[in-house]
Image (cartoon, rainbow, N blue to C red; front, side, top):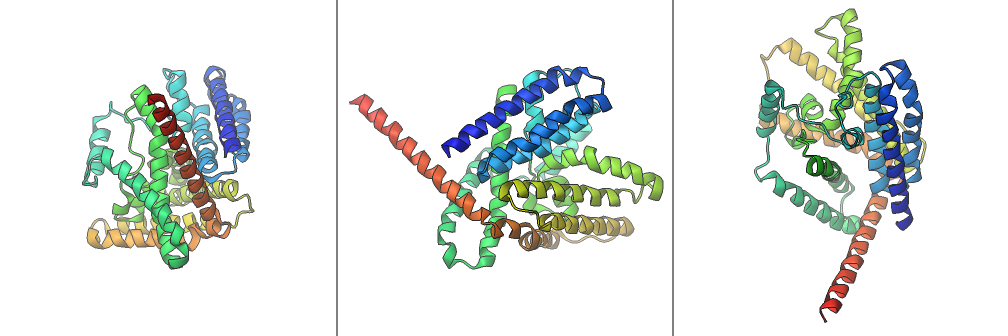
Length: 359
């Protein structure tokens, strides 16, 4: 793990150097094709850099941040769009917005702020948010402890625990990675998750609750261009349907890339089909809502469990098999054990040094 940490530091130093080039050189080139060409070497470097890392907890987030978030944001930046387009951005702001999973809250738009706060506070947890995150960290630790007894647990129960684990650990990682931007620069950020276990539909789950940073990137890069293209073919009312499918297909392909970097085996396309299935179901759901025109709606007591169960069942069917087949779950659990043992050693060294100093 010592060598892995050194490679991790080297990767992010090189990535930061690349973003300095984007800020000082590429930003001076007129927007459009020429700026896009000037960024092609950066796209290539961001694609190959995560290959240096082999651990799950360092490799997977780095792949997500560089290959997906950073490259998609730089693609928008090529045409002066997206979060990197304001010319007033400082260097460290530019770097933070590029590869961190953050989105600045638009305080200058009262309607947006009111709409966002209403949507978020209606499903806010009963405990203060500063208390919720430590509780989720504790719950993840308990889940890792439960994995010690995997041989006594039913396989379906283990997969259900993986579903919970994936949500908790992803939210924790994204929250921790966003902390420097909030603390150092005072950014007021949009929430990255909006209690996805309270989703009343698949559209609500994917569009308003689950990993909202990805949603904010996929909309301008995939959804809006595809919808604009189909508006001239099938009209404004139905143009969103192929745009939904295209967005889910791209999301599936990006997850397939992350899976390849984590497993280092040829893709089986199961995770891509997971997103295609959900994309088709969202299209059906939206079409039915358009035809019903608000005349019929399921009660939340029914729609929430149906949504959560559907996401969980399809995840067990298509999302997790590629990870469990290649024993990535065991690898992640092993890395956690190494981290805990390393933390214990460092704590013992600190306590020994402290008490020896007192004596």
